Every structure is written in C-alpha cells, then in structure tokens.
Length: 301
Picture 1 (cartoon, one colour):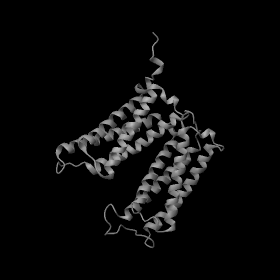
Picture 2 (tube, helix red, strand yellow):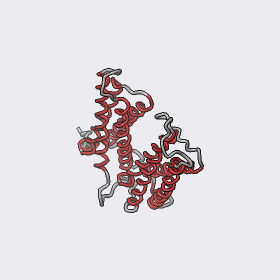
Picture 3 (cartoon, helix red, strand yellow):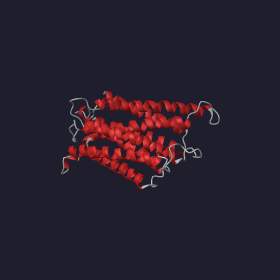
Picture 4 (cartoon, one colour):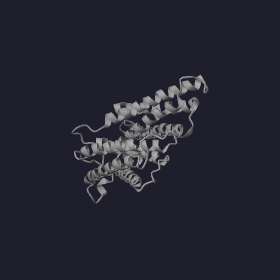
C-alpha cells in the first residue's frame, strides 16, 4: 500500500529552530491565558486587552503551524513569507505590551485582598507572558533578513519597521482619544492628520506586501515606498515641532503638569505620551528611509 505521509507533511515545520519557537509560542500562550482565565482573573480595559493579545496570538500561531505542517499555506493566495514575518513582529510588540501591562495592574506582593492563590496565579501568568514575548522575539530574530539573502520584504529591517510604525501610531491614537484636547488648535489637528495619513499608508504597504499583489500595480512599488517614507519623515518632523509647541508652550498650553489634574484623566499626560511617541516614530521612519534604499522587494516568497 502506498504511504499517504511523507511529502504531504512538513516535519521541518515543528523541528526547525523557527518551528520550535512557534511550538513554544503556542505552549506559553495557552498556559498564560489559561492561568488568567482559571484563577488569575482580569478586569477593565487593560485586562481585556491582555486576554485578547494572548488568545489572538495563540490562534494565529496554531493556524501558522497547521498550515506549514500540512502545506496548506500553498493553497492561500497570500505571500506566506511576508505574512508570517509581519505577524511575528506584530505578536512580539503585542506580547511585550501585555507582559508589561498585566503585572503592572494585576500583580501584587501581598495576599490581601485577592488571596494568596489568586496572587500566585497572576505571578505565574506574568512569568509565562514574559516567556511568550521572548519566544516571538526569537522568531523575529531567526527569520529576519540576513545580508545578501533574498527574502520576503516584511522580513527585512524596513518591513519589520513598518509594523513597529503602525503599532506606535496605534499608541498615539489611543492617547489622542483619551481627552488629549487635540481639536483645540488647527495646528494640533494638522498633527492628527499626519498621524492618520502615515498610519493608513503604512498599513496599505503592509497589506500589499502580505497579499503579494505588488507586482499588479501600475507603478513601481519599491520606489513609491521609498518616496512615501521620505514624505513621512518630513510630515513627522512637522508634527514633532508643532505638537510640543501647542501643548507645552506657556502661550498655548502648560509646560508643567497641572497640580489639580486627575491621574489617568489628565489631558497633559496624553499630550506628553503623544509627544514622546511622535519622536519615536520619527526616528523609526528615518531608520526605515536609510534601509529602504538598499533592499529589493520580493512579493512571491
């Protein structure tokens, strides 16, 4: 009887270094949200976000392992290499955020008032959340583009930076909606337009790369990305100057945090977060511009 195994299964999907990293991701992710759901507990928006991160990353990781082990990814009309590289970077950012937020808001040294058992479960969940971040970071390290290597665009430094830029923009948007008073001046509204435009275009670049449709465009995609990145640097430079002036200059805002500002509901705090991450994204776009001129896009890997 002819064997039905062998070439139909990709054993390297679970035995290679990347495959082992993904198995660890699946194990740590399942352990983390199981500990939290069983006894650790979570509440409010912060806890819900952490649970979403762990369950979402677990589900996508299981999907990736299944597709690679059974070769089902060859049936999907996407660029598999770009998809897995983009997800690994996104999962790394999301998991490190959850690994910081959960212990910050839910872990305490004493047993009162939650009880020692709940405290121990939360500490254990925090440990596995940290291990989950390390596992995803390991995959990014293992799959990143090496010098002279032909690889997917999202595995290059420029491609990985696109994910980070979009993630940082989401942090900025979160601070904007948290009573940042961004509609107070036309100048700050311009900054919001800059953040929104760059975020949308970055997401479009990632989407075209992941779907592998760059070759169907009527314009040179790689040159357009470099031109866009240069434009994004200029736009973020303007926001990096305008936002601090209209938020922290004594003529328009407050150079110091108001004494009567409630913790967690202070516009000044949101404005400071936006200013910090504006400079972070400006630096990311500058580094992206430096790298994007030296790579060649591969959409079919």
